[in-house]
Length: 285
Image (cartoon, rainbow, N blue to C red; front, side, top):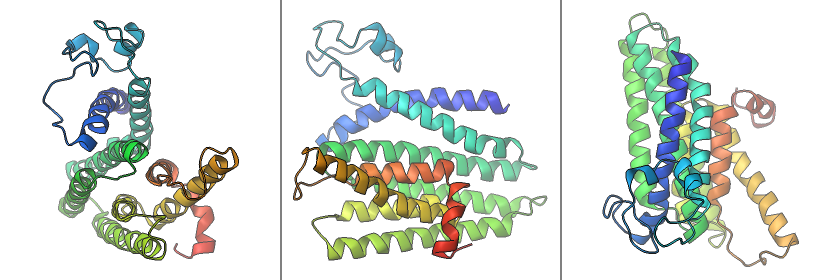
């Protein structure tokens, strides 16, 4: 059961990655995500179904359009593979807990948390890539993600209360409260930074930070702490490398969304163990 579900989620991740390519390309251009159907951006020819198979189609076509022979960006299979791999790690992290659910209500609760994690991972990939391209973090991804993840956490909380055999109702309420506090605290901290240094951080970063606090908060304070610290560590290292190599200047705008996404996903996937090392410093237990 665990292996089958993990494999299905991994394959789903590959196809979600294919859809994310559409989102990353079209959403900043305010184009429809469904119309026109997938097509070559050079010659406009509509792609056949067998040209839309994640990764495999790109390899089979040697990275070129079948009609006009124009190059198909390597980004497409990379994002598909990245999404598949992150869905795999998310499944490895959450599926065993789902498989061991003692009651149906617990299974619904744990399944909701799994879906919320997968949604957050997918949204973070899209936000990171769009920020790299446009230096923006679209509300059209952040707001719906907050609603979906918040709704899934509400389902998890209610399901835990319904499960008579479950002893996790109180824990679920604590998780829900921590998620709300995480969204508030992380969002306010980023807002303060944006107020102090408006050129270094925008409101898009603030909104995404609140979403990160919400998504990680369900899993506990260690995850929030890591999700708060890692982006600044990653962003600082990347900025230093770019400055030293001359790729950017001191006044050049560097998108912070990718660092936020990477830090948040690392915290979500692996925050349970290394996060404990930070607790004596930052206080929460």
